[in-house]
Length: 219
Image (cartoon, rainbow, N blue to C red; front, side):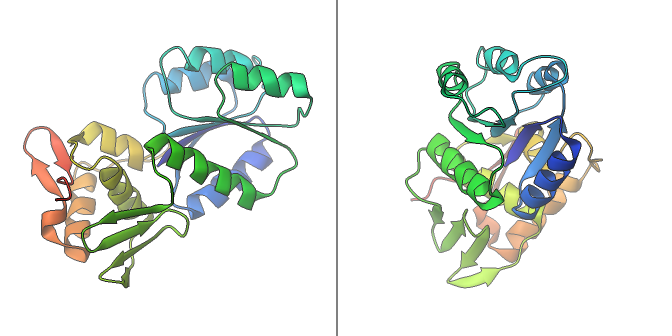
């Protein structure tokens, strides 16, 4: 899953990136509304974490612009704790509102809940044949045995299972796996696909020539 973090406190942003990377998320961080709006018009994000007090504009400005074309959940993370700001944020399209200071474990739980709700699921488990992906523990079981995956292998498997039966283009998958700061080798996606097939089972991921990849419908 790819998350956009909009936060002008660089120390806080660095800590959040580290903790969310450890949870297997791919993070892009920007500290200005203008740059963030440009990013969302070029890339897909599964969730946005939005501060309100930003140097070039109010976070509400971003939220208004974002909601014109995008439906992914937005979590406002701010020091503003008055009820009027909470109401305004939710009415403008935010899905959750968390005030600073906060506990990182609570933020992570709220992120999981928003992503789960966005995908239309009631819990953190994705079941596919003899495979179980647990989004809370960020773990994978095959025939009840744990499978060790890299962060990008996990993210790739997660997005393919989330879109079971749907062909995912190469571009959309790369956007899920890599942030703006990452350099992407030309065959990197194919290497991750190969590794998943080897660690799990080859029929799990189908190549749709000239388009991308998919996990077939679980019959």
